[in-house]
Length: 408
Ligand SMILES: Cc1ncc(COP(=O)(O)O)c(C=O)c1O
Image: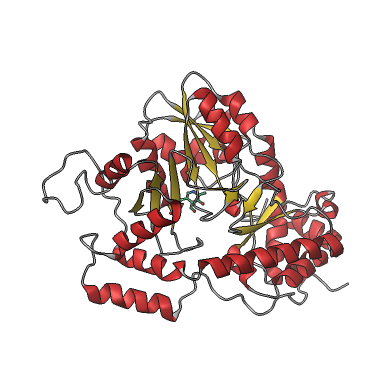
């Protein structure tokens, strides 16, 4: 047996992956053009307006480009009138911003469990969490997998809730033929550096109607209409403008997106097939059949049975894969379990077993790895190696379990 790289053996993938974000001639040209235009602020015909026009055409609804995905969520919730005394249901498996945006509006975020097969918000679990104070639901298109928009819309109609889609991990995903961002009250995007369309930082809100979009645009511009007088503050807003240079970077990558998405989907499928043949069936999370389009923001891998039997955690498996040259991290913990929510008894008391299990038993490999043609065979080989080395990995975990900075 070849020793695990974690234990001093050779790596499955010695050559590093191409970096992400991925600087190119196109991004450099776009950046220089935005620079040379002298429009370094969102004022007139900047790249920010160009990005908004592109998003509006993509989703068929008005878009507002903003500073990042976190402020996009905050602005969306504020525009929907969410505030003190309200409760908002939030998928338990997500980056913390989906929940903190609710807290920043003065409302109570309520964790809702995810389904075991897609790790996106479970509409049935959401129905159980509804109270007379519930005003909205935030689903997350986790790792590019569309949430169950049919079930979520039915729930929202039944209880008169607003629907917000956190699409920081997605762009074109579709549930049963319905594209994300086209049927909800608000959808938020992120252009942070790790995302599918990276601008360094940046975000956007897609809204149902032009009036709400105009209000969000004003909120994000210190309460002013764009292009109005310096002191024409009609609302108490904030500064959440996107930087035009970031918008230019995002725009420069939009043309390439469909091809990159196809490549990711192709390699994801090949990986699923190879894992089923050579390691174990069912190791990939999703896509479920209703996920008619998937953006593949990450490869989500379940800890193989032979490792789970030895109580090997996602943290340990991620460390082992990383050592083999495959970048990996354990999946998000349920957001209510992080220290920031330690004093929130309402959130803490929520029972989200699938989200808890997913955090312990799921590893995330970033999307850019799926652009490499060797990925299906190399991730399969790396997983097969960890399964063959289960005893060594279990020993390694035991040794590091209580060590400072260890993965436990
Ligand atoms: C699901 C999700 N929502 C929201 C955000 C926040 O986006 P940003 O980093 O642009 O503020 C992230 C960022 O990583 C995310 O993963």
